Length: 149
Image 1 (cartoon, rainbow, N blue to C red):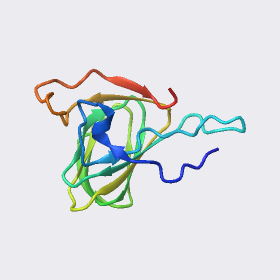
Image 2 (cartoon, rainbow, N blue to C red; image 1 turned 90 degrees about the horizontal axis):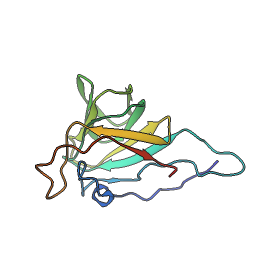
Image 3 (cartoon, rainbow, N blue to C red; image 1 turned 90 degrees about the vertical axis):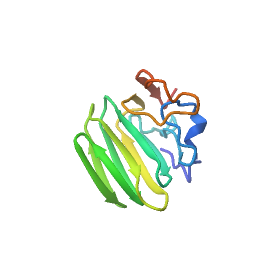
């Protein structure tokens, strides 16, 4: 069991992802319970994010379920065919394989948390926030990130 007080948030542009370049937004990267001899949570990952006004998480899919909590701010969430504007304390359940994305439509940073029932998270981008110099590129092939690796 671990308590991670105030995980560091870093600019999303630092992760060298040509499909999701948002230098004004920050995130924790995938967080998992560190392996400990006294026991730990094995199959749960959390991502903390602050989305800058006007920034968007590109439309994408995962092969696993996701739960999104918009803690503060105004966010336009797209889940499948539904697009809805929500404010803080809103929860979205995203079934595996469902296209989803989000845009901060407010004037202040939006605080956003994503939960996954696995430490390995795959992502396939359907849209892009292209990094400089990659504007004409198609989305990268789907990739799997293992937070324990």
